[in-house]
Amino acid sequence: MRRTSPLREAGLDAVTLVVLFLLLVPILWVFVASVRPETDITGGGLWPQRLTFVHYEAILAKKPFLIALKNSLIVGIVVAIITTALALPAAYALSRFRFHGRTFFGLLILGTQMLPSLAVLVPLVVIVRQLGLTNTLTALIFTHLALGMPIAVWMLKGYIDAIPKELEEAAMIDGCSRVGALTRIVIPLIRPAIIAVGTFAFVLSWGEYLMALALISKADVKTLPLALQGLFDPYSFSWGQVMAGGTIIALPAILLFLIFRKQLVGGLLAGGVKG
Image 1 (cartoon, rainbow, N blue to C red):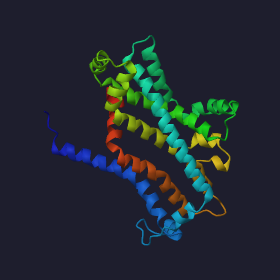
Image 2: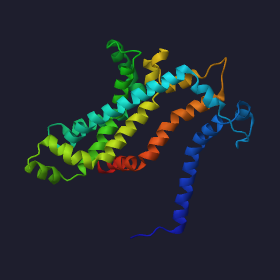
Image 3: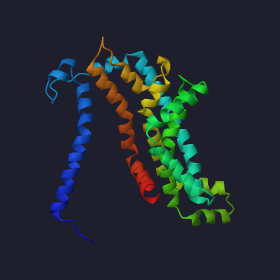
Image 4: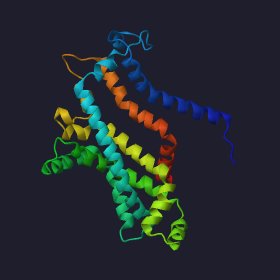
């Protein structure tokens, strides 16, 4: 095995530290600002001298923010469940069955992910309005499904590709149907990828802003990113509350990553390497 020189390892470590610094500093600054008094956020140094949680108390006392929190939870959980339920059979079909146009359909699904959100924003808004779903959580669920489904299918396909077909064939020889082999053999083996896909879909929906801005205008169906935008009130603006809101939005994604980090890393690697 070829050994890496100490100088090369030190260089790679230095690059890693620089990348981590660039990624973590904005997040840490938002959290630190959320627990500082209002006057210290813009007037004090970078290191906090006084701590306070009044910004969290103030923002959690706002009824529109709590309604938005509930809406984001509903949309995120439903999107995670439906994305997983629909992506699993699609990925299984692409991985196991040989049919005309299989490669084309697989690349077409992946290709839709390459389009910028703005490119599909207008047709999605028109379709939602024609269906009469404007200002509903159902509209957000449909649009968020369209955003996350391509990656979900390819993540699961990569995992299913890695499972030997002989395992399913042996189960079917013993009397299992195709569906039985899927539920008894494949699904238990790709459980980490299923968890990764559900987590990915939830996080994607939780922080989505552009589609929500285009489709939602009523206060009772707004999600957290829109509620955070509403905090930029020119007459009662508070940097502390904005930072507290940003921390609350980031918290579920951080917690989910910490809980399911092994499944997420395994699922992303399977989708990116084996697929």
